Image 1 (cartoon, one colour):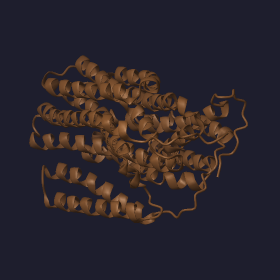
Image 2 (image 1 turned 90 degrees about the vertical axis):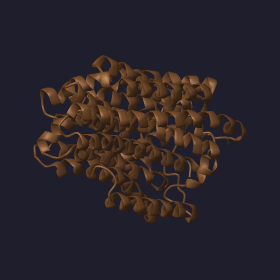
Image 3 (image 1 turned 180 degrees about the vertical axis):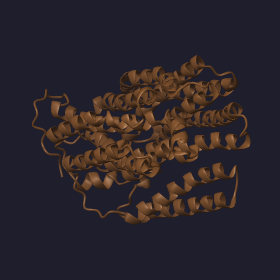
Image 4 (image 1 turned 135 degrees about the vertical axis):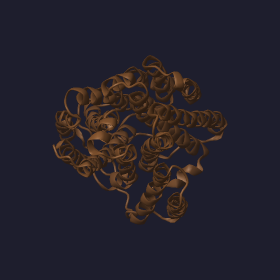
Length: 483
């Protein structure tokens, strides 16, 4: 089934106004979801005191949010094949508004707040794949790198603004106003989506893989539980062993199901292409480092340096703004020079930034953390959007929605796992050194930065290996849906 004709005025060979506004509608909805996600990170110390719960529980507001986004995104290939974009967008905007109201209610209930966050996550899980679906369906291949870069700029500006926004609101008002103040943006997104989204369902006749969703849910939750239980027990325990066994079993069953089913939830067969598999691994690592560091650094700075949430948020602002600013520029560089340059620069920058953070943790200052986070964000944004853009060239047009779904799941779960793992590092150190919070913060952060070094090294090796794989791979001709 072809997309409905886009009747808006457009210049031949250019992207139409209606397409641009459709992308904007989904981007604004995704922006608000990411904004509230990252703005809450700097309020966690406040919430620990307010709700009387440990950091390992409070961080579920981020890791649980990202896990729900992951699960909803895993269904996006099915949803985009069976439903037009406008009704999907309506469901997302309603879920976001209801969840936002629940989070803003002046009720001292952590579980109500978490439920609201999960509804917001469902909205983001629909809107982000929808935005990329519109781009990859209606934007010509020659301009795709720039548009994906612009989409990443929008979603990167939310993390840029999020910590500062959250710190400012938490410092002068209440963290609940974080949610109150995004309602106008949601209403603007609703109007843009209602008036411009016209892309039809792709129309493939396939059943929904409910068993695959159950197995994936068990696998992802079990993997996160390994680190949660290890954090709670101060190391290995019988519960950790049970979580590990459940993870291996459920992942094994999910992979078997994905390869055997006619219409799998996630089409893992795409990973048989070496370049798609390598780019997917790189994509996961980049997002793990990105979300993990944006969670870790504010908590570390507030504990070790004794700064407030506003200062912690401002600490991340220059780096996030730098990343948002270079995203579309790097997309242009990729369009002209290919992936090798941008991905190599990305991996080396992340390696240098993570190494410097690890070596200087004991002598960290606000200025030093700010500068090193800028280095991390530079490296992340130099490679992030281009990794997915390059992989998409090696996937047939008929499997584009499956590709988007797979990479979106990798993206979101990397963020969820990054938050969980780095939080566990801090919690384990706090359990070992309950009387010295500053030393515990330094030891926990040093271990976390060490993990980021290893991941950056792996990303660099993958980039080098992928150079040969890309030269021998055959890229199918990908044409956008006619409009």
